[in-house]
Length: 47
Image 1 (cartoon, one colour):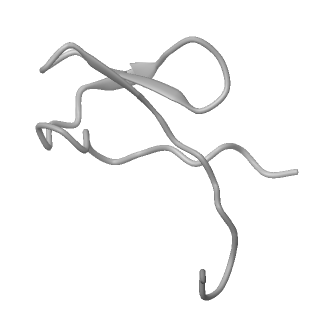
Image 2 (cartoon, one colour):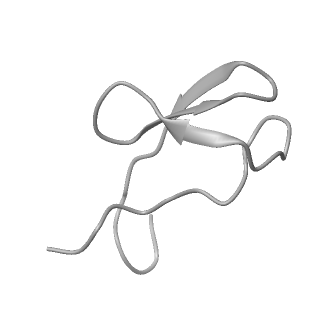
């Protein structure tokens, strides 16, 4: 199993000041004080 994917920037403000937040896939942006979660949906074309 590989390491989890790490976002390069916040989807809300675009800053790169991120830290892990509350469990699997959660991230917190210190620049805009928003938390968000990433989820892997699959490989290939989604229908």
